[in-house]
Length: 413
Image (cartoon, rainbow, N blue to C red; front, side, top):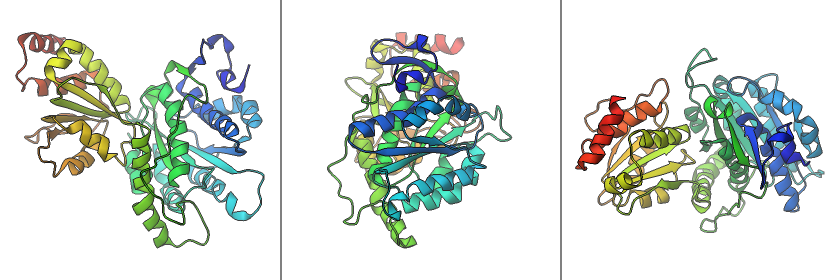
Protein backbone atom coordinates (compact mmCIF):
# COMPACT_ATOMS: atom_id res chain seq x y z
CA UNK A 1 0.00 0.00 0.00
CA UNK A 2 1.57 3.31 -1.04
CA UNK A 3 0.78 6.81 0.15
CA UNK A 4 -1.36 7.72 -2.83
CA UNK A 5 -3.81 4.84 -2.55
CA UNK A 6 -4.05 5.06 1.22
CA UNK A 7 -5.49 8.55 1.51
CA UNK A 8 -8.98 7.11 1.04
CA UNK A 9 -8.24 5.35 4.36
CA UNK A 10 -10.05 2.30 3.01
CA UNK A 11 -8.36 0.07 0.45
CA UNK A 12 -11.57 -1.71 -0.47
CA UNK A 13 -12.30 1.22 -2.80
CA UNK A 14 -9.08 0.82 -4.75
CA UNK A 15 -9.74 -0.18 -8.35
CA UNK A 16 -7.61 -1.27 -11.27
CA UNK A 17 -5.08 0.83 -13.18
CA UNK A 18 -4.44 3.44 -10.51
CA UNK A 19 -8.10 4.31 -9.99
CA UNK A 20 -9.57 4.99 -6.56
CA UNK A 21 -13.10 5.85 -5.47
CA UNK A 22 -12.70 9.08 -3.48
CA UNK A 23 -14.53 12.21 -2.40
CA UNK A 24 -13.69 15.72 -3.51
CA UNK A 25 -12.23 16.44 -0.08
CA UNK A 26 -9.95 13.39 -0.30
CA UNK A 27 -8.84 14.53 -3.76
CA UNK A 28 -7.75 17.87 -2.31
CA UNK A 29 -5.71 16.01 0.33
CA UNK A 30 -4.00 13.96 -2.35
CA UNK A 31 -2.78 16.96 -4.37
CA UNK A 32 0.28 17.83 -2.22
CA UNK A 33 1.35 14.17 -1.96
CA UNK A 34 1.10 13.74 -5.72
CA UNK A 35 3.07 16.97 -6.20
CA UNK A 36 5.79 15.82 -3.81
CA UNK A 37 6.11 12.49 -5.62
CA UNK A 38 6.35 14.29 -8.97
CA UNK A 39 9.13 16.45 -7.55
CA UNK A 40 11.04 13.43 -6.24
CA UNK A 41 10.80 11.83 -9.69
CA UNK A 42 12.19 15.07 -11.17
CA UNK A 43 15.15 15.04 -8.77
CA UNK A 44 13.86 17.83 -6.53
CA UNK A 45 13.77 17.82 -2.76
CA UNK A 46 10.69 19.86 -1.95
CA UNK A 47 8.38 20.24 1.00
CA UNK A 48 4.75 21.26 1.31
CA UNK A 49 2.93 23.56 3.73
CA UNK A 50 -0.85 23.65 4.13
CA UNK A 51 -2.69 26.24 6.18
CA UNK A 52 -6.11 27.84 6.25
CA UNK A 53 -9.33 28.04 8.17
CA UNK A 54 -12.25 25.63 7.94
CA UNK A 55 -15.64 26.58 6.59
CA UNK A 56 -18.20 25.00 4.27
CA UNK A 57 -17.69 23.63 1.70
CA UNK A 58 -14.18 22.95 3.04
CA UNK A 59 -15.41 22.22 6.56
CA UNK A 60 -14.10 18.65 6.52
CA UNK A 61 -10.83 19.41 4.77
CA UNK A 62 -8.74 19.89 7.89
CA UNK A 63 -10.23 16.78 9.52
CA UNK A 64 -9.25 14.72 6.49
CA UNK A 65 -5.78 16.26 6.55
CA UNK A 66 -5.39 15.24 10.20
CA UNK A 67 -6.34 11.66 9.30
CA UNK A 68 -3.77 11.70 6.51
CA UNK A 69 -1.04 13.26 8.67
CA UNK A 70 1.24 10.15 8.65
CA UNK A 71 1.22 10.17 4.85
CA UNK A 72 1.80 13.93 4.73
CA UNK A 73 4.73 13.61 7.14
CA UNK A 74 6.30 10.85 5.03
CA UNK A 75 6.31 13.32 2.13
CA UNK A 76 7.70 16.34 4.04
CA UNK A 77 4.33 18.08 4.02
CA UNK A 78 3.38 20.06 7.12
CA UNK A 79 -0.23 20.88 7.95
CA UNK A 80 -0.88 23.76 10.34
CA UNK A 81 -4.42 25.18 10.60
CA UNK A 82 -4.46 28.95 10.87
CA UNK A 83 -5.76 31.00 13.81
CA UNK A 84 -7.66 32.80 11.06
CA UNK A 85 -7.58 32.98 7.26
CA UNK A 86 -5.24 35.93 6.79
CA UNK A 87 -2.63 34.65 9.24
CA UNK A 88 -2.72 31.35 7.38
CA UNK A 89 -2.21 33.20 4.09
CA UNK A 90 0.71 35.13 5.60
CA UNK A 91 2.32 31.81 6.55
CA UNK A 92 1.85 30.56 3.00
CA UNK A 93 3.52 33.76 1.71
CA UNK A 94 6.44 33.01 4.03
CA UNK A 95 7.05 29.61 2.42
CA UNK A 96 7.94 31.33 -0.84
CA UNK A 97 10.57 33.49 0.89
CA UNK A 98 12.62 30.50 2.05
CA UNK A 99 15.20 30.65 -0.80
CA UNK A 100 15.99 34.28 0.06
CA UNK A 101 17.41 33.42 3.46
CA UNK A 102 20.52 31.48 2.59
CA UNK A 103 21.14 27.77 2.78
CA UNK A 104 18.13 25.46 3.16
CA UNK A 105 17.59 21.71 3.12
CA UNK A 106 14.87 22.06 0.47
CA UNK A 107 14.86 23.13 -3.18
CA UNK A 108 11.51 24.79 -2.54
CA UNK A 109 8.28 24.61 -0.54
CA UNK A 110 4.86 24.68 -2.20
CA UNK A 111 2.01 26.20 -0.21
CA UNK A 112 -1.71 25.42 -0.19
CA UNK A 113 -4.17 27.83 1.44
CA UNK A 114 -7.82 26.94 2.06
CA UNK A 115 -10.84 28.90 3.23
CA UNK A 116 -14.45 29.74 2.43
CA UNK A 117 -15.66 32.86 0.61
CA UNK A 118 -15.68 35.36 3.51
CA UNK A 119 -12.18 34.13 4.41
CA UNK A 120 -11.08 34.91 0.86
CA UNK A 121 -12.43 38.43 1.33
CA UNK A 122 -10.65 39.05 4.65
CA UNK A 123 -7.36 37.72 3.23
CA UNK A 124 -7.32 40.10 0.27
CA UNK A 125 -4.47 42.20 1.68
CA UNK A 126 -2.16 39.18 2.03
CA UNK A 127 -3.26 37.71 -1.29
CA UNK A 128 -2.45 40.93 -3.12
CA UNK A 129 0.95 41.39 -1.47
CA UNK A 130 1.90 37.73 -1.79
CA UNK A 131 0.89 37.53 -5.43
CA UNK A 132 2.72 40.75 -6.25
CA UNK A 133 5.86 39.50 -4.50
CA UNK A 134 5.69 36.19 -6.36
CA UNK A 135 6.54 32.55 -5.79
CA UNK A 136 9.81 30.65 -5.69
CA UNK A 137 10.78 28.60 -8.79
CA UNK A 138 10.36 25.25 -7.02
CA UNK A 139 7.64 26.38 -4.62
CA UNK A 140 4.32 27.70 -5.87
CA UNK A 141 1.05 28.63 -4.16
CA UNK A 142 -2.40 27.14 -4.66
CA UNK A 143 -5.38 28.99 -3.15
CA UNK A 144 -8.40 26.72 -2.52
CA UNK A 145 -11.43 29.01 -2.35
CA UNK A 146 -14.53 27.29 -0.99
CA UNK A 147 -17.65 28.88 -2.46
CA UNK A 148 -21.15 28.50 -1.05
CA UNK A 149 -23.35 29.83 -3.85
CA UNK A 150 -26.61 29.12 -2.08
CA UNK A 151 -25.54 30.22 1.44
CA UNK A 152 -26.43 26.76 2.74
CA UNK A 153 -24.08 27.25 5.70
CA UNK A 154 -23.14 30.92 5.36
CA UNK A 155 -24.59 34.28 6.29
CA UNK A 156 -24.25 35.46 2.68
CA UNK A 157 -24.18 33.76 -0.70
CA UNK A 158 -20.66 34.25 -1.96
CA UNK A 159 -18.60 34.01 -5.13
CA UNK A 160 -14.84 34.41 -4.78
CA UNK A 161 -13.67 34.97 -8.34
CA UNK A 162 -14.00 38.74 -8.22
CA UNK A 163 -11.90 38.91 -5.03
CA UNK A 164 -9.10 36.93 -6.66
CA UNK A 165 -9.28 39.06 -9.80
CA UNK A 166 -8.89 42.15 -7.59
CA UNK A 167 -5.66 40.61 -6.28
CA UNK A 168 -4.72 39.66 -9.89
CA UNK A 169 -4.60 35.95 -9.01
CA UNK A 170 -5.38 33.55 -11.89
CA UNK A 171 -8.28 31.14 -11.35
CA UNK A 172 -8.88 27.50 -12.25
CA UNK A 173 -12.44 26.16 -12.11
CA UNK A 174 -12.67 22.34 -11.99
CA UNK A 175 -15.92 20.53 -12.72
CA UNK A 176 -15.18 17.06 -11.33
CA UNK A 177 -13.25 15.20 -8.64
CA UNK A 178 -10.74 14.13 -11.30
CA UNK A 179 -10.21 17.75 -12.27
CA UNK A 180 -9.49 18.62 -8.64
CA UNK A 181 -6.46 16.34 -8.90
CA UNK A 182 -5.44 17.43 -12.40
CA UNK A 183 -6.00 21.17 -11.96
CA UNK A 184 -4.28 21.07 -8.58
CA UNK A 185 -1.08 19.80 -10.21
CA UNK A 186 -1.47 22.16 -13.15
CA UNK A 187 -2.07 25.02 -10.70
CA UNK A 188 1.16 24.44 -8.77
CA UNK A 189 3.12 24.07 -12.01
CA UNK A 190 1.50 27.26 -13.35
CA UNK A 191 2.43 29.09 -10.17
CA UNK A 192 6.04 27.96 -10.34
CA UNK A 193 6.33 28.85 -14.01
CA UNK A 194 4.67 32.27 -13.88
CA UNK A 195 5.61 33.38 -10.37
CA UNK A 196 1.92 34.07 -9.62
CA UNK A 197 -0.31 32.59 -6.95
CA UNK A 198 -3.08 30.45 -8.50
CA UNK A 199 -6.63 30.05 -7.18
CA UNK A 200 -8.82 26.97 -7.55
CA UNK A 201 -12.59 27.17 -7.05
CA UNK A 202 -14.11 24.52 -4.79
CA UNK A 203 -17.90 24.21 -4.83
CA UNK A 204 -20.03 22.19 -2.44
CA UNK A 205 -21.37 20.11 -5.34
CA UNK A 206 -17.91 18.76 -6.14
CA UNK A 207 -16.29 18.75 -2.70
CA UNK A 208 -19.06 16.58 -1.28
CA UNK A 209 -19.36 14.29 -4.30
CA UNK A 210 -17.61 10.96 -4.84
CA UNK A 211 -16.15 9.56 -8.04
CA UNK A 212 -13.64 7.16 -9.49
CA UNK A 213 -10.44 9.05 -10.24
CA UNK A 214 -7.00 8.29 -11.61
CA UNK A 215 -4.51 9.13 -8.88
CA UNK A 216 -1.12 8.36 -10.40
CA UNK A 217 1.27 11.30 -9.96
CA UNK A 218 2.41 10.97 -13.58
CA UNK A 219 -1.12 11.29 -15.00
CA UNK A 220 -0.64 14.97 -15.84
CA UNK A 221 1.94 15.77 -18.52
CA UNK A 222 2.87 19.41 -17.97
CA UNK A 223 4.15 21.46 -20.90
CA UNK A 224 6.22 24.61 -20.36
CA UNK A 225 5.47 27.17 -23.11
CA UNK A 226 8.29 27.92 -25.53
CA UNK A 227 6.63 30.84 -27.34
CA UNK A 228 6.98 33.46 -24.60
CA UNK A 229 10.11 34.88 -23.02
CA UNK A 230 10.19 35.85 -19.33
CA UNK A 231 12.13 38.99 -18.38
CA UNK A 232 15.91 38.68 -18.00
CA UNK A 233 15.69 38.85 -14.19
CA UNK A 234 12.86 36.30 -14.05
CA UNK A 235 9.40 36.52 -12.54
CA UNK A 236 9.99 35.00 -9.11
CA UNK A 237 10.18 36.45 -5.60
CA UNK A 238 13.30 38.44 -4.69
CA UNK A 239 14.61 41.03 -2.23
CA UNK A 240 14.90 43.94 -2.48
CA UNK A 241 11.97 44.55 -4.78
CA UNK A 242 9.97 47.74 -5.38
CA UNK A 243 6.19 47.89 -5.58
CA UNK A 244 6.19 49.33 -9.11
CA UNK A 245 8.61 46.67 -10.33
CA UNK A 246 6.27 44.02 -8.92
CA UNK A 247 3.31 45.56 -10.72
CA UNK A 248 5.18 45.73 -14.02
CA UNK A 249 6.33 42.13 -13.67
CA UNK A 250 2.80 40.96 -12.94
CA UNK A 251 1.02 42.86 -15.71
CA UNK A 252 3.59 42.57 -18.49
CA UNK A 253 4.96 39.11 -17.83
CA UNK A 254 3.17 36.92 -15.26
CA UNK A 255 -0.37 37.21 -16.64
CA UNK A 256 0.75 36.68 -20.28
CA UNK A 257 2.70 33.64 -19.08
CA UNK A 258 -0.47 32.27 -17.43
CA UNK A 259 -2.32 32.53 -20.74
CA UNK A 260 0.57 30.87 -22.55
CA UNK A 261 0.58 28.03 -20.00
CA UNK A 262 -3.16 27.43 -20.45
CA UNK A 263 -2.68 27.39 -24.21
CA UNK A 264 0.36 25.09 -24.21
CA UNK A 265 -1.35 22.55 -21.96
CA UNK A 266 -4.69 22.60 -23.76
CA UNK A 267 -6.59 23.30 -20.56
CA UNK A 268 -9.43 25.12 -22.34
CA UNK A 269 -10.98 22.63 -24.75
CA UNK A 270 -13.88 21.85 -27.06
CA UNK A 271 -15.92 19.04 -25.49
CA UNK A 272 -18.74 18.87 -28.05
CA UNK A 273 -18.28 19.72 -31.71
CA UNK A 274 -19.89 19.57 -35.14
CA UNK A 275 -18.47 19.63 -38.66
CA UNK A 276 -19.86 23.12 -39.35
CA UNK A 277 -20.00 25.23 -36.21
CA UNK A 278 -22.75 27.80 -35.98
CA UNK A 279 -24.02 27.89 -32.40
CA UNK A 280 -21.43 27.90 -29.63
CA UNK A 281 -21.70 27.54 -25.86
CA UNK A 282 -18.86 28.71 -23.59
CA UNK A 283 -18.96 27.49 -20.01
CA UNK A 284 -16.78 26.56 -17.04
CA UNK A 285 -16.72 24.42 -13.89
CA UNK A 286 -20.03 23.09 -12.54
CA UNK A 287 -21.89 24.97 -15.28
CA UNK A 288 -20.28 22.66 -17.84
CA UNK A 289 -21.93 19.69 -16.09
CA UNK A 290 -25.25 21.56 -16.15
CA UNK A 291 -24.83 22.16 -19.89
CA UNK A 292 -24.11 18.48 -20.54
CA UNK A 293 -27.23 17.41 -18.65
CA UNK A 294 -29.35 20.15 -20.22
CA UNK A 295 -28.41 19.05 -23.74
CA UNK A 296 -29.40 15.48 -22.89
CA UNK A 297 -32.68 16.65 -21.35
CA UNK A 298 -33.42 18.60 -24.54
CA UNK A 299 -32.87 15.49 -26.64
CA UNK A 300 -29.81 16.99 -28.30
CA UNK A 301 -27.53 14.12 -29.22
CA UNK A 302 -25.13 13.38 -32.07
CA UNK A 303 -27.61 13.88 -34.94
CA UNK A 304 -29.11 17.03 -33.43
CA UNK A 305 -25.66 18.44 -32.58
CA UNK A 306 -24.70 18.18 -36.24
CA UNK A 307 -27.90 19.81 -37.47
CA UNK A 308 -27.62 22.70 -34.99
CA UNK A 309 -23.91 23.16 -35.69
CA UNK A 310 -23.36 23.03 -31.95
CA UNK A 311 -19.99 23.34 -30.26
CA UNK A 312 -19.24 23.57 -26.53
CA UNK A 313 -16.06 25.23 -25.24
CA UNK A 314 -15.09 24.29 -21.69
CA UNK A 315 -12.92 26.92 -19.98
CA UNK A 316 -10.50 25.68 -17.30
CA UNK A 317 -9.06 29.11 -16.48
CA UNK A 318 -11.88 31.69 -16.44
CA UNK A 319 -9.45 34.48 -15.55
CA UNK A 320 -7.37 35.58 -17.29
CA UNK A 321 -9.11 34.03 -20.30
CA UNK A 322 -6.72 32.61 -22.90
CA UNK A 323 -7.59 34.44 -26.16
CA UNK A 324 -6.12 32.31 -28.97
CA UNK A 325 -8.16 29.20 -28.27
CA UNK A 326 -11.30 31.30 -27.84
CA UNK A 327 -10.80 33.02 -31.20
CA UNK A 328 -10.21 29.68 -32.94
CA UNK A 329 -13.40 28.38 -31.37
CA UNK A 330 -15.39 31.45 -32.45
CA UNK A 331 -14.49 31.26 -36.16
CA UNK A 332 -17.60 30.36 -38.15
CA UNK A 333 -20.04 30.80 -35.26
CA UNK A 334 -22.96 33.18 -35.60
CA UNK A 335 -23.80 33.09 -31.88
CA UNK A 336 -22.09 32.34 -28.56
CA UNK A 337 -24.08 31.65 -25.41
CA UNK A 338 -22.03 32.05 -22.21
CA UNK A 339 -23.22 29.94 -19.28
CA UNK A 340 -21.54 30.63 -15.91
CA UNK A 341 -22.57 30.75 -12.27
CA UNK A 342 -23.37 33.97 -10.41
CA UNK A 343 -21.97 37.26 -11.73
CA UNK A 344 -20.38 37.00 -15.15
CA UNK A 345 -16.62 36.76 -15.44
CA UNK A 346 -16.01 35.13 -18.80
CA UNK A 347 -18.62 37.03 -20.82
CA UNK A 348 -16.98 40.46 -20.59
CA UNK A 349 -13.57 39.01 -21.49
CA UNK A 350 -15.03 37.28 -24.55
CA UNK A 351 -16.60 40.53 -25.71
CA UNK A 352 -13.22 42.25 -25.47
CA UNK A 353 -11.34 39.41 -27.18
CA UNK A 354 -13.78 39.10 -30.08
CA UNK A 355 -14.24 42.84 -30.56
CA UNK A 356 -12.62 43.71 -33.86
CA UNK A 357 -13.06 40.30 -35.48
CA UNK A 358 -14.14 40.75 -39.07
CA UNK A 359 -17.30 38.72 -38.48
CA UNK A 360 -17.67 38.18 -34.77
CA UNK A 361 -20.62 36.14 -33.48
CA UNK A 362 -23.50 37.54 -31.46
CA UNK A 363 -22.72 37.23 -27.75
CA UNK A 364 -25.40 36.56 -25.14
CA UNK A 365 -25.18 35.32 -21.58
CA UNK A 366 -26.72 36.89 -18.53
CA UNK A 367 -28.88 38.95 -20.90
CA UNK A 368 -30.12 38.42 -24.44
CA UNK A 369 -29.70 40.88 -27.30
CA UNK A 370 -32.75 42.83 -26.08
CA UNK A 371 -31.34 43.28 -22.59
CA UNK A 372 -33.78 40.78 -21.05
CA UNK A 373 -32.53 38.37 -18.40
CA UNK A 374 -31.52 35.05 -19.92
CA UNK A 375 -29.61 33.52 -17.00
CA UNK A 376 -29.79 34.74 -13.38
CA UNK A 377 -26.84 36.22 -11.49
CA UNK A 378 -28.36 35.27 -8.15
CA UNK A 379 -28.89 31.84 -6.62
CA UNK A 380 -27.37 28.99 -8.60
CA UNK A 381 -27.80 27.61 -12.07
CA UNK A 382 -29.51 24.26 -12.51
CA UNK A 383 -29.75 22.00 -15.55
CA UNK A 384 -33.40 23.07 -15.90
CA UNK A 385 -32.50 26.78 -16.02
CA UNK A 386 -29.67 26.09 -18.46
CA UNK A 387 -31.95 23.96 -20.66
CA UNK A 388 -34.51 26.77 -20.73
CA UNK A 389 -31.85 29.28 -21.84
CA UNK A 390 -30.49 26.98 -24.55
CA UNK A 391 -34.00 26.21 -25.80
CA UNK A 392 -34.86 29.91 -26.03
CA UNK A 393 -31.87 30.48 -28.30
CA UNK A 394 -32.48 27.41 -30.46
CA UNK A 395 -36.09 28.44 -31.06
CA UNK A 396 -34.76 31.45 -32.97
CA UNK A 397 -32.92 29.20 -35.42
CA UNK A 398 -34.16 27.41 -38.53
CA UNK A 399 -34.16 23.83 -37.31
CA UNK A 400 -36.06 20.71 -38.33
CA UNK A 401 -39.43 19.81 -36.82
CA UNK A 402 -37.94 16.78 -35.08
CA UNK A 403 -35.36 18.88 -33.21
CA UNK A 404 -37.93 21.48 -32.24
CA UNK A 405 -40.37 18.80 -31.11
CA UNK A 406 -37.71 17.31 -28.83
CA UNK A 407 -37.04 20.73 -27.31
CA UNK A 408 -40.75 21.35 -26.77
CA UNK A 409 -41.23 17.96 -25.08
CA UNK A 410 -38.32 18.68 -22.73
CA UNK A 411 -39.67 22.13 -21.87
CA UNK A 412 -43.06 20.67 -21.02
CA UNK A 413 -41.66 18.27 -18.41
